[in-house]
Image (cartoon, rainbow, N blue to C red; front, side, top):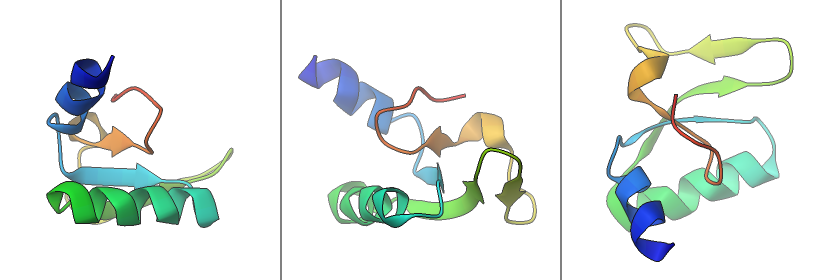
Length: 67
């Protein structure tokens, strides 16, 4: 299981997180682990991305599969 999680983290260093403490703490941990950066946020109704970001090239918050 550990190898699968680490392989997922290698998929991308671009993160899309929920705009709450869980999302930002996950992003902080990943930034410290591999330099990942937040490129977007989402809630149940809206997805906000930085200019030029393709969500298919991003990871969604830790514990969720990549798109």
